[in-house]
Length: 96
Image (cartoon, rainbow, N blue to C red; front, side, top):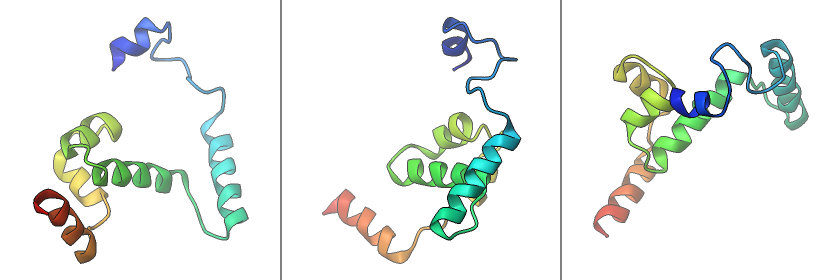
């Protein structure tokens, strides 16, 4: 991934998006208010990881690439739990 960014001319100390963390946090908080929920940037991170995992992305990729966790166990605690209905749907898709 680093090589891709370097090849695009973006140094590790540069921002990809011209917005500060504080400004981004305000945008996310305001979006949550508009839809009537308490929303934080970390909620979006968790949602993206859970969505990727449930879409079939291997947990090792979610852990190392998306979340950049050092330990797989951190990612396992981080992802949302799977409901019984969702587990049955996955089993049906695999064996049905």
